[in-house]
Image (cartoon, rainbow, N blue to C red):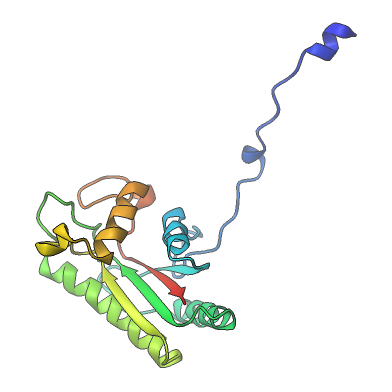
Amino acid sequence: FLIEACSTKAPKDPGKASPPKSPKIVGASDGSGISFDARQLANEMESNYVTEILFPKGSAKLSEPAKNSLRHLMKQAGKEGFLKKAKLITWADKEMPTEKKESLSRDEVALAKKRNDALTVFIQSSHGKVEVDPLSMAERSEGLRKIFPDERARIQESLDEAGIPENGEKNKALSKASRSIIIFTR
């Protein structure tokens, strides 16, 4: 009895039995959830109102499910006073450029801008009092902005630390290409 009481068995790993569920990325067909890095950015901005949208390759058009999800999120954020500002963090169809390599093509930079413009028009037409701050992840900060980092540089640094791949890296699991993170704040 004494020997039996002193021996222990390793507990079963509860994480394997039931993997955690997370909300669906708007427009994603694979059922994946809002990424950890999107949640981390929202946390840094002191907000719980965050979503991700997956755009079709080469397109800046918002799907109907994306629009409906954004309307729902804006309604929730408005109830808590988090509909003053919207931060749009948007990628082209490629990952963000590395600090040391060349920037993305003009077409990729233009695509990220078009996606931010489409989101801005939708958000402001749905709720005109929202101040929209679009950030393109198709460009890196340069010149004086490298010396005196702006918000884009701070967000890119945060994403770098989270392990988000840069252009040319093969890490598909953390890919942000063709996505936009939308965070509503006070």
